[in-house]
Image (cartoon, rainbow, N blue to C red; front, side, top):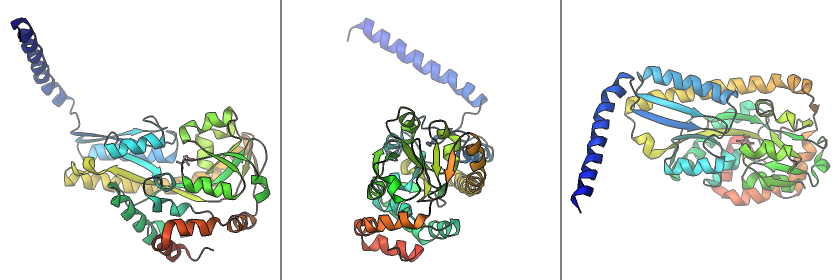
Length: 340
Ligand code: X2X
C-alpha cells in the first residue's frame, strides 16, 4: 500500500473514531434507548390495534426508564404481510401481528381458527383461543422458530362487501371476483362457495377494489370503516362467515437479547393491550354499522345456514379435516365441538 493511501485510511479511521467518541455523551444526554424494536402491522393508525399498541409503547418506555423503545409501524409501512413475515423471520422486524390464516403459509395449523362458521360468538372464540386450541397453535408457531405472545389480538367476525350486489345466499357468490388475503384456506373457502377469489395483501386491497381488479372483499366492520373501504364498496352483507385474530409474533433472537426485566414489562403491556383492543374491536364492530350506512353502504343479513351447507356440500370441511390431519383436527373439535 502506498503511503498516501495509508495516510488517507488512517485519517478516515481517525475521523470515524473521533465521531464515535463525540457522539457518546450526546447520545447519553438524550437517553437513547438500549433497545429500539420495530412492531409492524397492516392496519390503519386509527384502528384499536394501533391505538392500544401506541399506549403500550408509551407505558413500556416509561416503565423501562427509556431503555426499551417500541416503534409502531401501522398500515404495512414496512411492507406487505408477506414481506413482513420474511423480515420477522430474518430479524429485520422484531414484532409483527399477523392473522393465523396468513401465518399458515409457514405454520399450517395456524389457520384452523378460520375454518368457516366455526365460532357462534365471542365466548366460544376466547374459550378456544385462550384455551387449548390457542395453546396448540402457539406450540406449532414456536416449533417454526418464532415466538408468540399468549393473547391473540382480535380482528373480528368477517362480513362480505361488494360494489355489485348483496350476498343473500350461497348463489350470490357465483363467479364473484373477491379479494381474499394470501392464505390457502381463504382461497379454498371462497372457491368452495363458487366465487372467483384472488389473493391480495391488505396494503393493495383498497386500490384493487377502486380499479375494479376485484368487485368484493371481506373484513370486519372496524376495518371497513378505518381503512375507508366504504369509499369503494356499496353493499355489506353480514355473513359472519369467519372469525379472525392476529397473533403477536416475535423474532426469537431479538427477544432473547432482552434482559428478563424488560421482557417481563414488554410481555405484560402487550398482553394487556391485546385484551383492551379486544374490547375496543367488539365495541367498534357493534356501533360502526350506522356510520357506514350514513356513508352510503347498503346492509343486509343473510341466513348463514345455507352458506354453511354449501361449504359442506362442496366438501370443504372434509378436505380441510384431511389437510390438517387427525392431531390438529382432534384438538380443534375438542375446543369447538364436532363440525361436520
Ligand atoms: O388482510 C386482511 O383482510 C386483514 C386486515 O383482515 C388481515 O390481516 C387478515
